[in-house]
Image (spheres, rainbow, N blue to C red):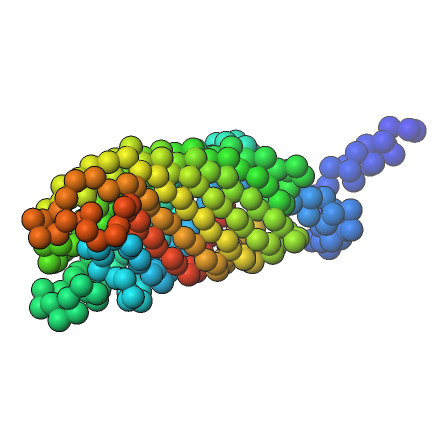
Length: 277
């Protein structure tokens, strides 16, 4: 007498849910809360960023092409970060200044235009600390890597320097999250340049140092598939400094130019879009 009710109960338990029953479960407050928590703690391993910027170039030496000049040019950025774990990541950044003609302070009427096409490459690893361990929360990252900058001058008067900077970078990044979607990013890198080469007729090679800093405001957009896109806008500065040694052309003695060191700086305003998967 008891077998039939037990079999009937088992059959009802194994029967598939109807669409209305499944919808009730999915929309239940407890289910929605668990889904929100799962999304919040989701580990996003890849970040791919593209951006544009307006860059202003400055130099302080007598053979500079831009003392007293605005000399603003556009640049494009591509950056990728792969997080091997929640705290260890590998980063690669490539920045390319578009070929542009700059003004010459030394000879404004020079017929041979000063055309440059600078680029930068940074590669390294990051160590990230996230106290709350939630996607979009505040974090602090330590960075170490390799920095390479080249300043090729396509057409130039003889006194224009073409420089290359290579060396080690050590830095820190700080993310200050107002909530899961908005916040500020800060970054500072110190550059130890064991090679700062002047490849014009001066032909000097010496040690130097540099630094990079940036500050950005970001906002995050989430699509219906869970992919997040971060839009950021901010300011950055990169500078290279070294002592001067030797002389340039026979008529271009740097020691007579009141320049006892070389400094080349890039101010920029940038806009970037980052897909986080």
